[in-house]
Image (cartoon, rainbow, N blue to C red; front, side, top):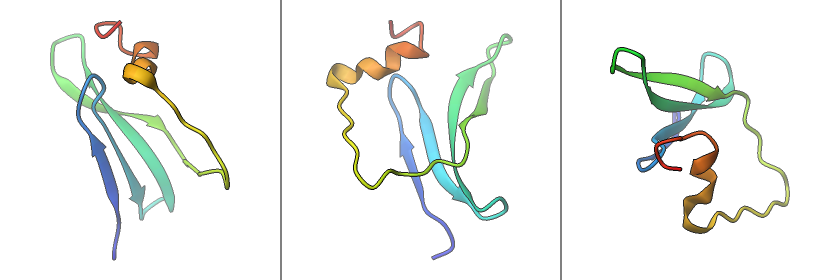
Length: 71
């Protein structure tokens, strides 16, 4: 396998993938620019998972943090 990716389409459209050039897992979010063009913006770099973690987001409430239209 060369790389892997995860894409999520919804209130916040993101893609997470392993970048072979940097050796890091990165997240990009699809944003609307001032002139109504869509652009991918790097929103997280060097993502690492903890050995143990708990993630819970009822009704996708995490999206309200950075998506004013969803709020």
